[in-house]
Length: 124
Image (spheres, rainbow, N blue to C red):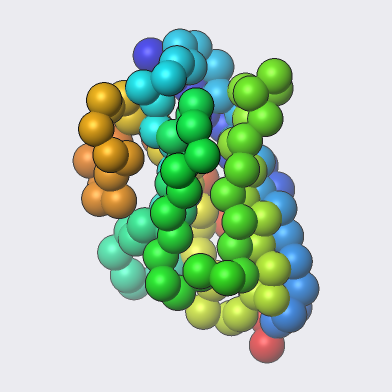
């Protein structure tokens, strides 16, 4: 079991930066993948970024590649999403999610554990 709590959302202007945090509690091990997803009003939830808890593998959606950076602090059991050069189309509820797998981390929605989400609003 993994419990996830996001924080760090807010209202910013286009071009600003924001860092989201996701505090994880429970079993974090080498087989854990942790990712960020987002859901804009009226749209389906979509993949943003993912990393393996132990290792260097990271993946990004094309829409955020080069602007967003995912990272973790193992000592604090915390996942981060640094978001730079934010655009109005980045406005969404951002969710932290986790799943265990010996294979590649998923970019689909079938994660076992989800946080409650944090709102990010980018004004133009």
